[in-house]
Image (cartoon, rainbow, N blue to C red; front, side, top):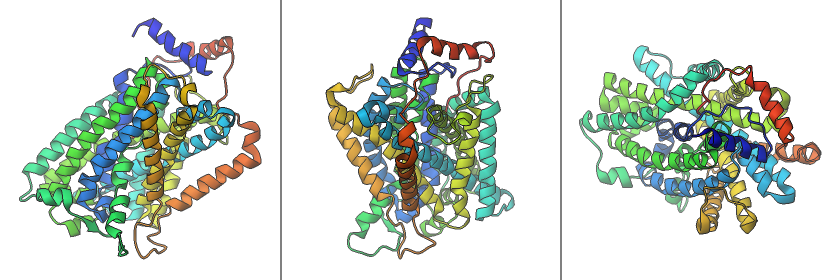
Length: 516
């Protein structure tokens, strides 16, 4: 990229109203790596595998996966078109403000808060999965207890390490993020190869693609369809976080093209690699009943199919991928918090919008993301179904935030000014399908996952949804509508240049952070 190209990125950011505070060093591959790492098939597919074993079984894993993947590509295409017009760290809530017309501030407010809650839940889900897999490895190694308090401890340690890396290890985070792409791809190849060779027997093709399991206790008419649909959570949860490519556009060269490409390409590559992984794991199931009720079902399948030593090796591959994923999720989450705080929408916004002049990263926002994720995972101490609820919150929060700007782009019609990455005549049909799918899944994943419903198996996703919607609505009506006017313009061209000048002498020239 030429200097002129870099200058044009900064010029576009100025047109959107912001100074170039973050360091723009990321290329197209690194932007793709952000979202591919946060999607993380070795995190989402494996940590949510037990949810699908319980809700639907193999048919949900291996037929549901491509079904959901195609729909997510449609959602990603619709998002990418809007990203090309507005390549800024605010991402979704900025898009809603610009597309919402006279009510843009209100649309922006609700989009931002659903996005923020969804990203915190995704971080909790990722590092929660890491806590589960790492605990399973430690249990197999030297008998580490596999109970909620000890799993929560590993989860907390992982969160703190990710916070420290994002605070002090900027160069290392950028390097690990790029390595993560190859770790995931090679890791899938190794895991599938071992699971094809090592086990004494494999499941049949019929079992892999058509076997159904109803572990929910649902017995009403149509229960098979119901269980299949709620079991799509495995795939839908894995396909989250690709909005990270949008949140990192202020650190990406040629952002109006690289950002949209990062969104779409990360979904497509994950679709094919994840399907291969799921088929390989399902084929290697040795004892469905015992493995589906294990604390970490996918880990138990590795150990049963490949034996102790080789099974632990496969666990380490998955743990490494989950570690990368959680690290990158903190990065993307902190950028969203920073951008939303920059516009005054988060309590204590002056603290969260501060940029560390040495690293050019939002240090305070990093630790807010860490604390928020920890709080959201604490109910796991008391409710075995809490992990499924956390990932449901992530899906619904993020996809509502994805859907609002897509809906507003449809409503804008010909007044929308596309960027260099455009869907052309396909924009409207793709947008309609994307919004319809988001409405469907937002209903699906608040439904009960176990019957009869009790206090210990209650899906508290609906509670979280009502609390977020209710609290943000009340806050908007009582206070925020008087002072939140959407994304704040930082100033004139001269004022933006002055802001940027404050970083020139003190900033250490380090690579931008690549951020599941």
